[in-house]
Length: 264
Image (cartoon, rainbow, N blue to C red):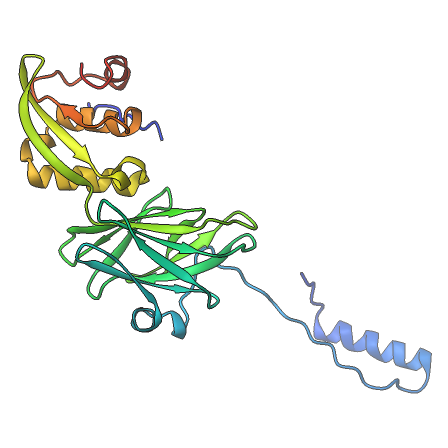
């Protein structure tokens, strides 16, 4: 049986014949025909996710958007409607793109294009990762003050669900694991994982990036007990200088893992 996860996470239209009888009756009773009038009705439809427009195609956003670069990955960010976006490099190699806005509920603040050939994988918490054609994670993107929504494979929209939100930004990162060093701790082999600043607060995108980058660096970190310890640190001890994972520790349930402070 699989081990439980730690994240226990109008108008009513009459027939034409009836309308005709009603109109003739009204005309006979009222005398001369009144001046003709025109009535216009309209219908409005709502889509649960943003719909692309010609101006929001990936090629156009890449051409007109503001480059926001972390490592080898550059996203193009275009505000909607036109506005100001200011990218700022961070000490851990990530980049924050800030917006000056106070939008109404549900407003799309920006559209973001992935690099050519890459695709968006938007996660349930509104964060996202960008992957290449082979599925390899290239970067993680964490919004503040809004949520990412997928428009198509190459374009995502930053939507603000709270009216008048300020301090809206995107945090883009290519590095989630800054180091992974083996040593001896508490009488056994221990892997000290150093997460980046973004990885400590980046939501589901950061969890995916840490997991995939760590296993790529140290395949032994992919065992069930190492993964459980990693998840426990991500949720319960994000600010520890290093997340120490020991392959010899037992694979226990979530409550026992938390009670043991992630190292049962």
